[in-house]
Length: 198
Ligand SMILES: Cc1cc2nc3c(=O)[nH]c(=O)nc-3n(C[C@H](O)[C@H](O)[C@H](O)COP(=O)(O)O)c2cc1C
Image 1 (tube, rainbow, N blue to C red):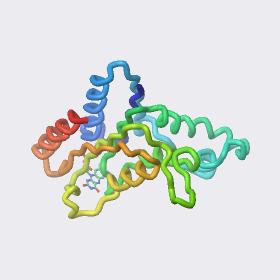
Image 2: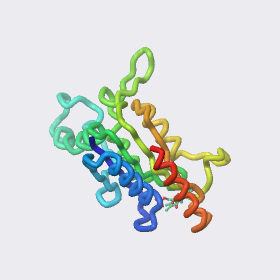
Image 3: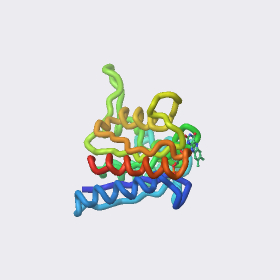
Image 4: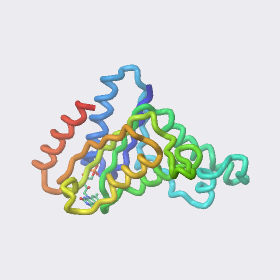
């Protein structure tokens, strides 16, 4: 049993999504005391933006790799293998400018791999990375779950994880973080109740 924790908030000790990822790790380790927990802090140790070499390393077959691509391949593949080896994946995903932090996008860029996490056929796209639970710890300043404002944060993650075949996907969220401490406290209390049900 392996739990993977991903953090991408740049707000340090103030971070609400990191409070949620803390809470989620505590919840799942209490449930599975023998679990191994792997932590990947994408702010402390950022993955670089993909470039021509890493794009090839991620998305093409190893037997076609020229030297520079072959050299880049193990580090890219390690990110994917860590995800594929995990039974529970906890993803800290704050909303920054209506989307996810670019650090988190760089992680997703290593998971969308043709032939490994998805494939296309005449029947359309097929996700190949099911068989794990993914929980997104979402934090955002405004209110979006009432559908009054468009967002590309939870919707992007829903589309991405659905596309690669994750069918056990959950969101735990604190909204209205920008409304002040009372809203944050209420949001965190409600999120903790949701976490207890997972
Ligand atoms: C760089 C940055 C951009 C933000 N952009 C948005 C935004 O577009 N919409 C929104 O509702 N809140 C926005 N916020 C507020 C955050 O979503 C909110 O503070 C949330 O708690 C962030 O998660 P964190 O506390 O884990 O960093 C932004 C905050 C930061 C730091």
